[in-house]
Structure formats: C-alpha cells, structure tokens
Length: 362
Image (cartoon, rainbow, N blue to C red; front, side, top):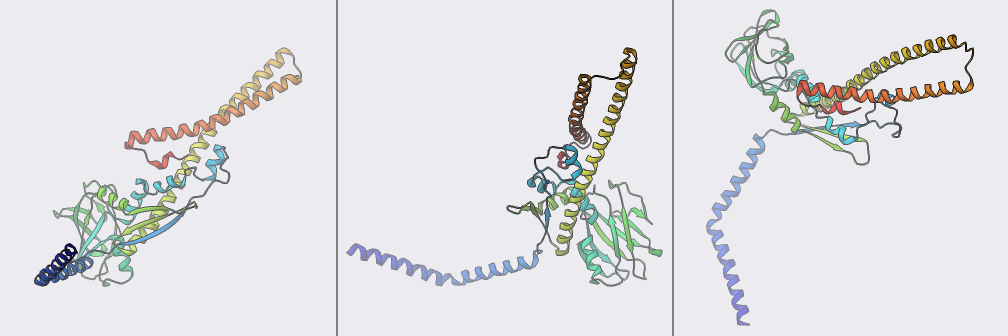
C-alpha cells in the first residue's frame, strides 16, 4: 500500500515539475508558436497558387470485338488499343511538342519598359499575357502580342523587343545583337522557325518588351509532371488533369492537349489508310496481271487442244483455285499492314533513336 502511495507522489511531483518548467519557458514556447504561424502565413502569401483543370476523353470501342477483318478495322477509325494504352499516349512527345509550340510555353514575358522609363513587371507566359490583355487588364498603350514563337529547340536566353515606326520591331539578344529585324530572322540560334506578330498601340517609339526563352527539356519535363490521367471505373472514359500556376493556362493547356491528342490519332488513322490502300492497289494490279496471263494461257491451251468447253471437274478446279487466291490475298493484305508498321518503326528508330508509341497501334 505504501509502495502505491509513493508511486503516486512521484507522478504528482513529475507533473508539477513539468508545469513549473513550462511556466518558466512559456514565453519561448509562445514565441515559437507565433513565429511558426507567421512563417506559414508568409509561405501561403509568397507561394504561387496552383490551379487544376480537367477534360473528359472517351475511347470509341469497336462495334464487334470479335471482328478480325483488318481492312474493316482500319477503315472504322477505331483503335484496338486498350484504355490504359490510350491514357499513356496522351503524353507522347508528338502531342506535347505541339502544345508547347502553339502556346509558346518555352517563353516568359519578364517586363515591359515604356518610352518614359516606366517598367511594368509581367512575369507571365505568353498565352496568359494575351488572355489578360484581351480582358483589358493592361493599359491600352501596351503591345498586343498576337504570336511570339521561336521554335522548340530553345535554351535559356534573354531577348528584348524594341518597337520601330510603321509597327515594325527589332529583337535583340542579351549582347544587343539583332536576331530578328523587320520580320526577318538573322539569328544562328537553334530555333527552326520564328513567328512573331506584335501590334504596338503606343504613339511613342522606344517601348521595349523583355522576355526570356526557357530550356526546352525543362519545359517538357515540367509539363509532363503536371499531367495526370485517371480512368473512370467501369467506363471507356478517362479524365485528363493539368496543373498550372495560372487558372486560364491550366484550362487552355488541358483543352489543347485533348485536341492535339485526338488530331494525332486522326493523322495516324489517315496514314494507316494511305499505306493500306497503296498496298491493296499494288496487290490488285499484280492479281489483275496474273489473271490476264492465266486467261491468255487458257485461251491458248483451248485453241491448241481444240477444247470448246471445259467440263464440270475443270470448272470446280478453277473455282477452287480462285477461292484459294482470294484467301491468299486476304492473308497478304493483313501481312502487308504489319510490314508497313514495321518499316515505320525501323525508320523512326534510324532517324530519331526512339519509337513513338502512337505508331504501335494498328
């Protein structure tokens, strides 16, 4: 009994000591809590918000999954890939390259310097500036950027656009060397195509736009990281999610990825039809020639042997050979489709060093 009382007394002493120590150090504890709250608040204020948009995509299923007719499958335009494969094909380089190029995601507008020296910080992608400009969020004297593309093979660099009379402009690099003048490219940069169209609404000359190009590989990796696909259970529908630091950009990127993905599938389908009809046309010409030769040989044989009409057994033999030739044609048509696909893969491996998954579909 005395042992139990002693244990309780020790517990009471321990709790008393804890509260005494807390009272002595409560100022430090409270200060730590306040500083943590302030740090969390500052982080939320400084950190850019992240927006997410989504698009639903539906995979058209074949009307008859047991149908093995290769030609009918090709002409139907319906992919034989399963839904999981289609979800992965959304993020192919072919699709994402087109999105990066059309939206100029590898370019950031830093600031606009007006003729009087006023500097307005922009720090936005081109498409986001265009959207906000259309909503009249910037002064009417600011430039209307219709397009600003410098190709895909970009590295990190800095440029300045300087306006000139008659709505012309020069583009200078960070060394103040002209790389684009009056609509003509004078740059040795590894950009294949420059497409720049700007309307200067200010009546004063000397305005400037400072922008920077980003490393293409970094842009591609960042875009891929911000794309997620999710399958809807028990449906042939999947949802595409895109994250961005800007609300409008997330929506526009998601919609454009969906459009470019569908267009890539249409282009692939057209290529399959073109290759298939080319192969069929060649085979038909070959068969037509063989039939013509066979008819000539038969006519020659009938004339030499003075045969007026073939008997029933010969007729059945000819019919059997004709059916056999038809079956051979169908088999060769199917084989030809896959040979064409193999040739495409070999060419891409030779030219690019990798295989785009969109070319693995029949």
